[in-house]
Image (cartoon, rainbow, N blue to C red; front, side, top):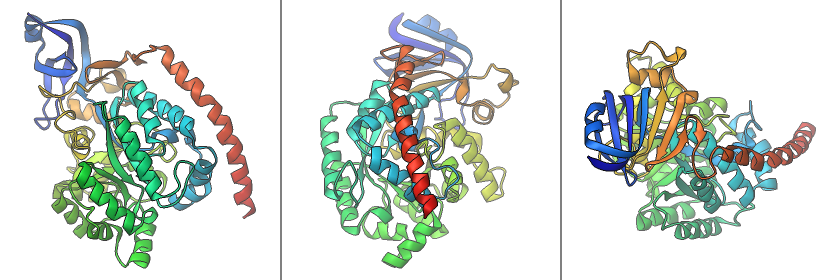
Amino acid sequence: MQSVEAVIEARWLLPVRPRAAVLENHAVAVDRGRIVDVLPIAQARTRYQPTHRVELPRHALLPGLINAHGHSAMSLLRGVGDDLPLTRWLEERIWPLERAIVSPDFVYDGTRLAAAEMLRAGITCCNDMYFYPLEAAQAMRSLGLRAVVGILTIDFPSRYATDADDYLRQGLAARDALLADPMIQFTLAPHAPYTVSDQTLARIATLAEELDLPVHMHVHETAQEVEQSLQLHGARPLERLDRLGLVSERLIAVHATQLLDAEVQLLAQRGACVAHCPASNLQLASGTAPVAKLLAAGVGVAIGTDGAASNNRLDILGEVRLATLLAKGYAADATAAPAWQGLECATLAGAKALGLEARIGSIEVGKEADLTAVDLGLIETQPCYDVISQVLHCAGRENVTHVWVAGQAVLADRAIAVAGGPGIADEVLKAAAPWHNQVRQRLRRLHADFSVQ
């Protein structure tokens, strides 16, 4: 028998590739962080001698979920701007609070809080965009999460940087400092067309080519953004970005709620993808991405939570359910965005968008073992006829019991399993608690200021 680090046995295996496949009573053999075999449980027991055997007789085992867009540190601002549209949310809540309290410690503690929440939701990889990328990356890795961190760029000053050049300088320095860690990747992350100049965007387009990095950016988030771009630049945002060489296979267009049919085709022709954040878009009444049209055109659609300040939950299973239902309603077509396609959006499509398709996003021999186990043996998930549909439409993050990142168990029986063990959750909560008082005090001042106006 061949020795391996782990064999994970499950009632159902959802490999994602081949599409819509469901394998019953199968096992995944893992060694040195990679998947070395996918085979029936009976065969695995005669072929492999694992150091660890995990038996999941009532679970579905699927690729680790990928959060294609988040602002993790904003978990410390959860709920501060509920029931406000995007412009007021930014101007009356988020930007004033960020100017007052964002710091390296804020980002580290807030990102750790988010990472713990994401692990318990079955998320193994997060594509993040926020200040202090070095601290964000270190926070995610401290809990075992795979991190894709944005080199945030904005044309106005913050507590983090003075101007666009400073944002890029600090972000690139963070990337250089973490190049040796294979679990951390970077994107170039200009915030949005309305906060970044043509000169800076052109420079980012050049850097993306030189460094072979994705470009992660809010695009066509609201109708107001489009109208403003027409007034200031004589072009819709996507047209402006295309002129500057940014609409390519590198582009991760976040939100994309305001797309003309021609713009859907442009994204498809250029090989760009969309990071769809349905709950955040609904929370801010920004609109919803035309998912059925995007998928029909061949545009990759990945799923993101956005930050907890505009969503309140970091729950990809919940986002996928919402995304598929919205797609059906938006298209007036019940066959749009079937469950298997939703699962693909939450896994392989996210991996493709981040340039990680060869490493993660599906359960295949040779890929890194990023895996999530969902318990389908509960009252709420029985009986079970269509396993993929059951995972997306009946189960939720509370059904996630086990998570592995590159073969490392990071969640076991709902408890965080990385260094520090069960006590790490208390540690994360303890570090987050003082920020609650700071934010609450600042909120009182903001409420007073804006009520006077």
